[in-house]
Image 1 (tube, rainbow, N blue to C red):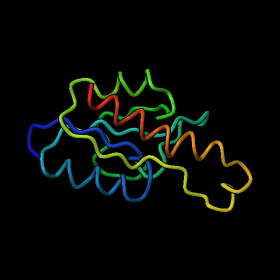
Image 2: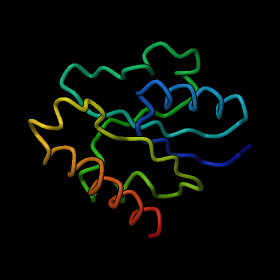
Image 3: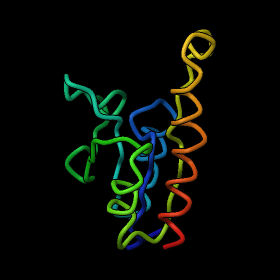
Length: 113
């Protein structure tokens, strides 16, 4: 992992933040994607000890141009970004399809490019 540039989408979640910490310890250069919100809160990344050692990006995997931009010069992508609140998915299913399916497609296409 040493000297690789790694993009972690969903880095602001529980699993993503712990993966971020582990890969920093392994010597990876981390780009950590946090879902943008108006409070500029980075979720679980707020409490990690290695904040100064990573590049935190805020944005949305639903934006294919953004995905193309953040995957440039990246060797490895861990795609963990997803909407997970199951009860709300019944109320607003389109947002879940857009994020979990189209967002995944955006990241995959960007990684291939």
